[in-house]
Image (cartoon, rainbow, N blue to C red; front, top):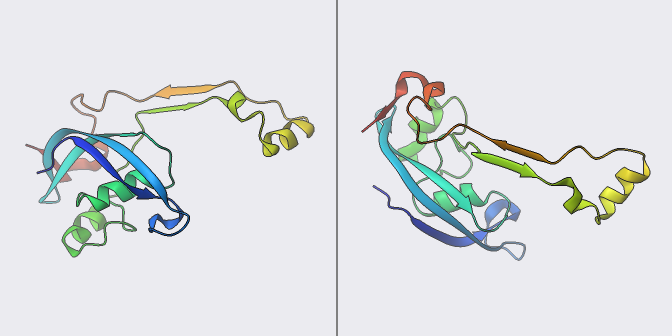
Length: 146
């Protein structure tokens, strides 16, 4: 079983410790323990403190708890059966927020505005509470919480 805490490591550029990889940190909060397809799983709430490519996927794989269905980073025969049984990667966003005005100084945004494109309103969407009962119905009968 895994405990809540913080994961530090590198992420980005294919998530290898290469010259382009940078330090990254993710907070991990354990919500529930269970079984998926007969194998142990842990439902966690992840909060990236930095914004690196594939950060959450890399950090969970590094700490030995790869995201169910993540065939790229799981790299373990022990999780292959669970990954194959998952309908897709089980990584879901609790909240998505985009403030387009923060991009206004970038060269790409200057080109977009020069083309006459109007920026959309800021986006802020929140999903249902991940700790609420019934929030895992999309995986059918393969998931059992302990």
